[in-house]
Amino acid sequence: MDTQNTSAERIGEIRNDQQRYFESGYTLSYKFRIKQLKLLRAALKEWEAKICDALWSDLHKSSEEAILTELSIVEGEIKNHIAHLKEWMRPKRVCTPLKMMPSQSRIISEPLGCALIVSPWNYPVQLLLNPLVGAISAGCTAILKPSPYVPNVSKVLEQMIGSTFESKYIAVVQGNRDTNKALLALRHDIIFFTGSPALGKSVMRAAADHLTPVVLELGGKSPCIVDADANIEIAARRIAWGKTLNAGQTCIAPDYLLIHSSRKSQFIAAFAKEIKRLHGEKIKDSKHFVRLVNDKAFERVSSYLKDGDIVFGGATDAKERYIEPTLLDNVSPDAAVMQEEIFGPVLPMITFDERNEAISFIRQREKPLALYYFGKSSIGKEILRSTSSGGACINDTIMHIANENIPFGGVGNSGMGQYHGEESYKAFSHSRSVVETPTWIDLPFRYMPYKMFGLVKKLL
Image 1 (spheres, helix red, strand yellow):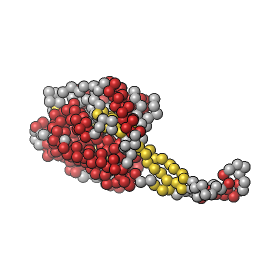
Image 2 (cartoon, one colour; image 1 turned 45 degrees about the vertical axis):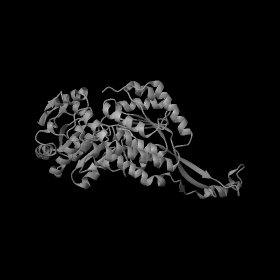
Image 3 (cartoon, helix red, strand yellow; image 1 turned 90 degrees about the vertical axis):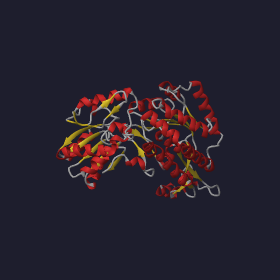
Image 4 (tube, one colour; image 1 turned 120 degrees about the vertical axis):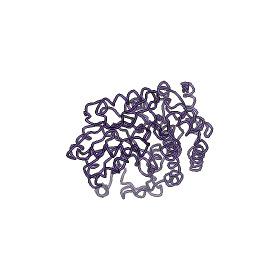
């Protein structure tokens, strides 16, 4: 299925319609926002089967994995917003210093306005609709741009959104980079982009022309440390799961392994065992093992297999875009597999003898989106204090994204801005400071020629 580009003229019409709709004030009330959140939740239920079918067609993603990693996360986000939106919208009283009495101060939140949300192909439902929940809660309108690399999913999402919302409020536009170019040429009140750091820089350059705020959810090479005292069986199981979820096409997948030299052989054996536990003896036949998204991705990821010694896996099938989960040993830090985000089921290993070696290795590179540590909790906390990453897990992988009560986002090269839960609401809102001063009294101290300044100075 080929995705048809939405014309630049139609994109301009949608943007103008949404501007007028936002300026009308329809999106501002609590009642309106809650209604739209409930409509989105109902639409997800109604379209669940079609969404799952489309994910299978485009990515070979099973319905179980689709529900676990896509639909349930959006459902949880919607529930959280419905439960807390009234509290988030409420003006917040703050203390006013004595020098400003009898004024009162408060912070009110207001929607930024017309949002543009651009999502990638790897989790095409979750990464398009989760930001949308924040836009709806904040009272914004939204143009949604899904990825052309998953045409079936993108088409179903367009149909779902089109049958649920008016395009002057929320609309889906389709297409390739020409569509992106047309979208980014327009002025938006906020751009929420999920994708690669390279494309994130292009978005930021375009946003600079209009001084548009951006949230950039990018990626990078997320390290996974397995220390000398790690529970190897548990570490292997959780790393194998995190690395083969969506066939490694996950922005927070463990990208490379820093493993204590004393545990490497044990880990290799345990990893092989856990992969077979997850996907069976014939991994290729597993309905839960996703395929690479397209031929270009397959060629790129399969090329990494030559960058080290294959100690587990390594089988490929170009016709099916299948790459077996693979462990690479004796990998050079300068190899291509260690320079680029892998985005596939290939896991290179680098050994260390002293913990400081692992810390130094991480700190010499760009700040990653995630960091994983397996070993004593107390040591894990020390590792986190010595490094920086968007998020982290101690003795686990991936799971920090599943908690809608904690923020998700990158730092440095892995992104800027956060979302999930209240952070999603804040991402699409502006915190407006308001000072209200009564007129029944007008103290003269602040006015020229500053009489009794000695007393005023003591209050400052």
